[in-house]
Amino acid sequence: MKNEETYLKYIKDFGNNAVVLKNQMSLESKVKTTSVFDYFKFAVYYPWKDRDLEAVSYKAKLFECLGLDVRAFDVRAGDKNFDSKLLYNGDTIVLYGARGNLPKGVNDYYMVEMTGFACRSFELRGGSWLSLFELVNSVSHKVTRIDLANDDFSGIVPLEDKDGVMGLKTRCELMYFVSNFRQRKSVRVGKLLYGIEGVDDGAFGDGNIQDDPKGWSVTFGKVDCIQLQIYDKNKERLARGVHTNLDSWVRFEMRFGSIGDRAETAFRLSYLALQNKCFGVLNCQLLRWLIDFKEVPYKEYSRSKYDRLPSWKPYDDFLGGVESNHMAINQGRVEATVTTSVSWIMNQWAKTCVMLCKVSQKYFLAVLANSMVRYLEHHHEDDNAIEGQVKTFFLMFPKELGKYDKDTSKQELLDFIHTYSDGSVQDDTQNGNTGVFAWNKY
Image 1: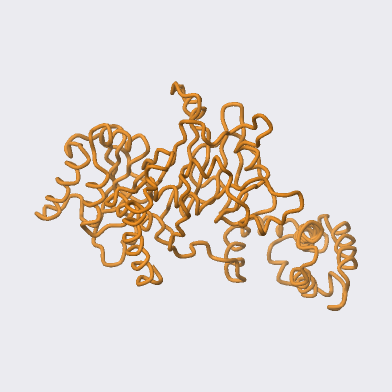
Image 2 (image 1 turned 180 degrees about the vertical axis):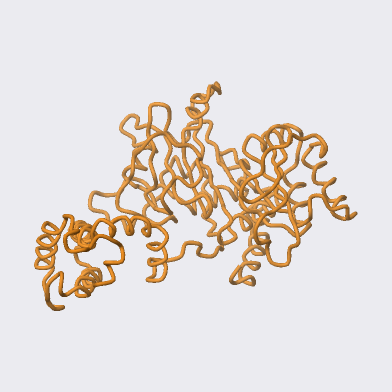
């Protein structure tokens, strides 16, 4: 990480505080939630097929801890990152034969991937998470993803509105919470979604709500950084043909990815929490850090002051009244700059730009003009910087687009672009502007 000293101090402090949490506050008995590991993926920096005694001995210990026979596997096709894939017990995956660049200082490695089903199978075989984490932590490794889940089986946190009391669904829609995720302006509603990697569109504070007769979920963040998904686990199981015999089952699932060493941090915290027998406390602390649902604010209460509101009592009861644990992590999302924006345009727009230029260079400029009109009309109404950038763009083409100066008003700019674009979306082949190279004339 960027600041390893601060990071290690944070881990050490949590280890010390965990004893206080456990012994002095007795929070474990107050936590009204079932906390589980629901996904675990890690790399071991040993070659899979190496006959070195140390590597062979470690592999034997690892599979003994997992409760699996290292020789009993089904061969599967590799993926884009590994040549070979082995499937154990129908749920645990081993990947080896890494393609591409290896981590610095590493000659070879293999990955072990445990899905949610594999985690439950591991527990049914009598597996110990503490023993597994000790084994992983004893060698050079990297945890690339770990999921921590809190389950409400008792209906402490109601999903639906009842007797005039607002439930979890409505609170998500109205954004009655404070969150560690970024915010956007609107909630996108779509089809049912459960745990599909990479489908949400960024680390946004109001979440991606999916509502459907078959179930409900709200997703925050990105799975390769940090993702939180709250969903009706009971209906999700029923949609897959599995009956649970439960009246209520709401899952709060936190997914920590590889960017910014988030997964490794969550792994180390979990390891310390298991050692101090306060894993449930840790899960609740992290969950409250990611999102804290609040009581209904006053009508004119500013959203910027929501953090001052008391926590929603059912949610607070569910978490056992614990305080949040602000995880020490690096900022994984790169803020937009001119360089990153240009890079995105070159990667995403190149093919489309070539096609439009082949039709006509004026057509291409008109498409850009119309896009800018929509942007100016619907976004950044008071953003002079954005408006100035648009003006600068059109001043680059004085012969085709007219001449005006920096004092041109926004409305004059919009009128001009409207006039230009309305009269320019047509084929310009008669003037010889038929190919992409005609763009160079400007």
